[in-house]
Image (cartoon, rainbow, N blue to C red; front, side, top):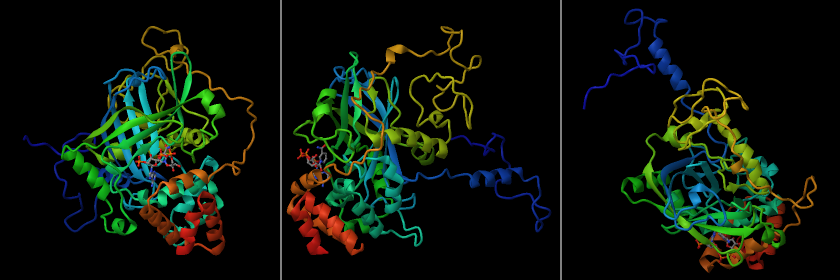
Length: 481
Ligand code: NDP
């Protein structure tokens, strides 16, 4: 290999990278140490703010291969042709811990997929659980605070977590999944992924369908108990994924969807937009649509995984959102988080850059580049406003052919709606009832371990919710308490 000169960030060769310039061998440094200053100044700025949630993660590239055309439901370009391959980037994460926490927390796992389609990036930003603790985003900061470290001791605080859950029965279903044997995955390869939210697809007739995405692991579900997890190295899941891909043992997931028509949604006994609920498989069976495989590690963790910017608002023609309140808040919050963490031009970084041309009239901002990454972000000179008189001369114009069909809401009245009268118990009970005796025992022991640290009033309220889910569920936890 040929010798490579060390350079400054401006590309100038560096003669000495071991010694600063000083006034004599024992004297102070001088002001012409601009190379030293550059090094220290850059070092000071090596971190971007870590994500408040999902801080600890690992990502890899791969492909989604379509095995069933969805042309009946959607005009989305990447969902038309059987055999079509779309590049993806998938980031797994834990939720509550900071970057210095363990891969083996009892915590949901983030499962965020970026499909680099020919018509822009489509992000399905979900978890390894089909539901969530909340169905109104106004509670999200409170919920996360209650699961994070105690503000005074900076230690985990199970009593606070249960205090939140005791005041929010809508969390019961997700809490049951979290405390079950599936609460600590063995690795990121051994988890399912879910859009969790209800999303939508729309076709060339302007018909909209509600859809839930399921990514079923082909490696099988494998999990750890609390005792087993405590013995793992903190970075074990990251290592497992990187090593498996390096060995050529590419992890894969069978991709399935559930589909509901708008008409069905209107009369379904479950609110299909309530993120605390699943659509039971017997009502809406899973339809297999393809395979997702991860086969390429990142080259630089910070540049790619840390700066990857997933956003549920990254939609492409033929796809859309839904009235799910949590989804709508995330459509704002995720973009906002990336602007804060990575900057307004985060979509110009290679990991985030679409694999198709990007043409718009947004201008400037920190780190605006041309070319940057894939070289497809052109900040054209000339007209930087729309409309202009240069249509057909290389200046972009909106295309009405991509117009999303309207979302119909009947008899809607703008107000604040209390969702407390919802049934938050039946589906938690359904899950409990499908568990084996060993799974029930693990679940109830995990709950009793944390709940025993909360006060009597919290315990009583929690037992009340568990009883509504299934009397046996409550009795088992009560006996352990
Ligand atoms: P089904 O019997 O058709 O499906 C049960 C589902 O539960 C399967 O997907 C199974 O996944 C999954 N499961 C089993 N154990 C656990 C666990 N400890 N944590 C999370 N998921 C688990 O029943 P229904 O569709 O009627 O749903 C019954 C309950 O199953 C729901 O209330 C919900 O809690 C849970 N569930 C339902 C899902 C859905 O989309 N309908 C999705 C995931 C969970 P696997 O095939 O990998 O064993």
